[in-house]
Length: 226
Ligand SMILES: [Zn+2]
Image (cartoon, rainbow, N blue to C red; front, side, top):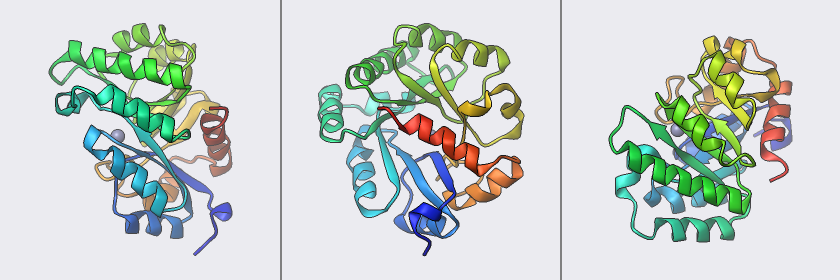
């Protein structure tokens, strides 16, 4: 197997997948994975994956689809785990207008942004149909570095989001022209993303006609200075 140093590719956003899927991606030259929890009961599993497999960065958070599964002390538990794991980021969090309890979603989102600001952690964001609320809320947390995963906004949204410390991760070519080069990342969103597992990232980068070296520079920019 290749050593991590010679691995040219990364997956900026995925969820828990079997270890063997990550190993397979290693063999294809993917050396870095940012593994997100969607719900509270996945937090420990995400941390455990990073102890078993090289190159796994971790994000803990509560996705807007799963806020109703959170325990009453979720925020205290999340803060404790983040303090215990100083490199861990916050994700996947966000807003989804197509799902119920939008006001409650906003409350969870803001609580997690507050933690991100306090503990100086980056956040991985899911946003569907709620760009104006997203921009309005993020403007209250200007220091937080954000990654919009599976970015689906237009050039007007990007113009506004450029004022924040934003990165944009994509799988589709149509969004690339509106994103500043140095803010662009790629992802698989495995196991439910359309490209399949993280082992498909090199083929994706090629299909999108992107240069893996500048993508790596962007990733370093995103992961550094936290
Ligand atoms: Zn995701």
